[in-house]
Image 1 (cartoon, rainbow, N blue to C red):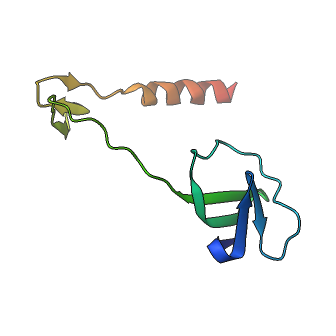
Image 2: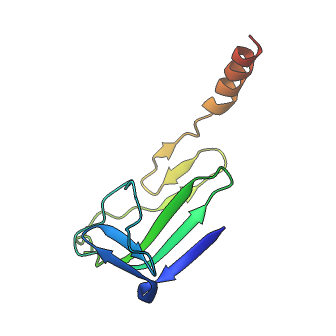
Length: 110
């Protein structure tokens, strides 16, 4: 179950979110701070199957472009190697999952 609130249905004051027709702000435990100058345009409130409420904010921010660089490289996702770069470097695919899964299976049997 979820509800989405647009700008006309919530207020954002001093880091507090007030939904329409609610006098108290939502008790939010922030996972990260909003960037300076960010203004939320949409608030989504969701109830997970586990019974936990989450609040998501969609914020409009200005992103500064990265400086121009003369170094360019191409990346190819391959079959024999995870990544092949245009300068000839190959990054191998980490195959550790199968070994770790077997170790976990053995440990779970104990």
